[in-house]
Length: 116
Length: 111
Image (cartoon, rainbow over the protein chains, first blue to last red):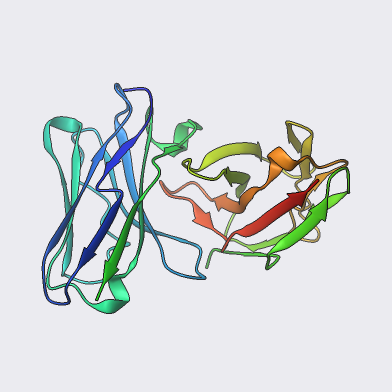
């Protein structure tokens, strides 16, 4: 597609439920990133996928968070047993390859998650 | 560790006013520095970047100079327009495959 597409754009869920957030990167981009922005905080790195390499999961805040990327394209971020502190904007981004090579990173508009 | 501290907002300016949004950083090694902008209803997009000390990034009338001695990358524009109203994020990268962002500064320009 023309840009990074994320869905849903808004999600309200009850505490304890699981949620899935979807990201469709720019066609041909091999690198995909998930970030989180909580109220008043900067963007927090969550996870990075590059091609078929093992993902960099160093930013995932707990084992309730997981992500996968099927077929090297679409990615799903799953949050299990959601807590109120999980409320945030979840941003997906992609780039032609990894940032080491200086490629620009393109962001989606984000998925706003509210846990009540 | 790596971190970015930027000027807290919100910032409200009249059209044609001079803009400065301060950004300082802490980093291991020699980072690349970036400003990203998020316009209402749109995703984050790269505004400008600088990859080494004394480099100046510029785009759309915005400028920022990489100052290693003061560990700063302040964003400036000589004459802002209503269309510049957005949230601005300072960010750094030290070679790992992620970016470290500041908290963002909301700018509102009034006619």
